[in-house]
Image (cartoon, rainbow, N blue to C red):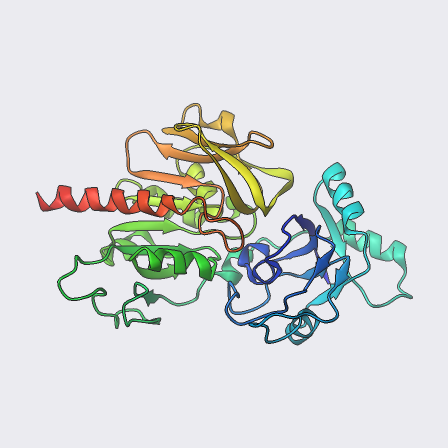
Length: 361
C-alpha cells in the first residue's frame, strides 16, 4: 500500500479520519497511542467508505466497548481492503515527519521484499493528481433541512423544504470536492436546503439552479490541480454569496489572484488555535490540510486576511473587500473536534438574507 505519510493529533475521532475524503491517497499515523477503544458505528462515517490508503497506530484496542459500537477497527479495515499496522512508535514517526516533512511511504506484508528496491520505488512514486475527481459526487443530489421530512433524493424531485408558513429555506449549491457528511449535516441543521454538484460543474449549470448561495467544500490534494473549479469560481464570484472551507478556501484564493503552497507537514487534528483578527477572539478548530494560502500573494488580491493560525501564523481565513465572499482553512462543523466555529454558517446565512432583501426591494 502506497501513500503520503501524514500524522493526525486527535485523541478521538479515528472513524471520522478514516472516512474523511480529504485523506484520500494518504497513509495516516495517529499520534495518540491507543486507537479503536470505542469501536466503529454507522453514525460517525463521513463518507460511504474508508478513504485512507493505510492506517498506523501504536496500539489497536483489543476489546473495544461502547453502547453504539457495531464493529471493531480491525474488522472494518479488513472489510475495506485497507492495510493497518500497529506496534509502531508513532510519536517517533511524527517527529521524523515534523523534521523532514511529509514522507512517501509503503506498508507491505512481504517481509522478504528487497528493501533497497522498495526504497527506489518509493523515490520514483508520486502522489495521484486526480484525487478530487475520485472523491467528488458523480451525480447531482438534494438534501432538505433536518427537521423537514425530506431526505436525500435525485436532483429535481425535492420540493420546497420547511414547515407551512415558514420562510423558504436558503437554497445552497454545494460544490463537492470531497465533502464530509457532517458538514452537510451542519448546514441542514441550520435550515439550508442543499443541492450537491460534482466538482467540475459549470457556472451556468450552477446558476440555473437558482441558489441563494454557493458553498465550496473541503477536499484532498493540491488546489492548483483543480483548475476547472478555479475557473468556475471566477465566474460565480459576483453572482451569489460564497463560503469556502479547507480546499474550497484555497480554490477561492486562487480564483482571486492569490497563491498556495505545500506545508512541511500540514495541519491535521482537532486542536488548532485560530484567531479572528477582527474580534481578537481565539477558537480551537478541526483541520485536515497539507496546503495553505500564501499571505504575501494576497497583496494585490481583493482579499483581506481575517484569521491566523496561532501555532505558525499561516492564513486561516479571508474575506472579499467588496463582495459577500469569505472562506476559512478549517472545518467549522468539527467532525471530529470542537464546535466553536459553527457561527460561520450564521454569517453565510446573513449574507444570503441580505441578498434576498436587496432583490425583494
